[in-house]
Figure 1: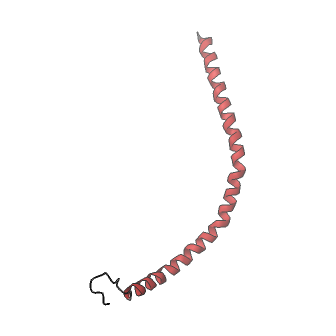
Figure 2: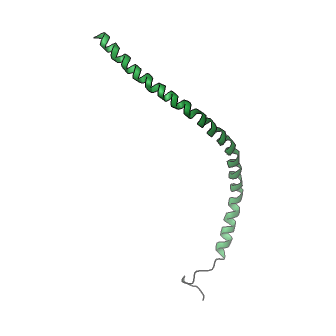
Figure 3: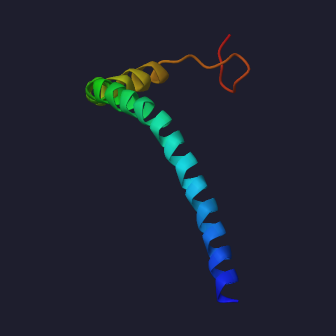
Length: 84
């Protein structure tokens, strides 16, 4: 009985070993791709930070322009109080 349990345990461990081996092979395939992605992200990161800074500088200016242009906007002819 003990021998049968050990044999079954050994069979399961062989299956786990096979799955882990396949996973390891896939990870080795993915590894260079992830390294390349990491390199690209490090190159893009400063550009995105600079863009964020510029957008924060432009944001109040755009709000000011929007406010000024909507103040002087003529009403649509179908709106109440429109003068023809």
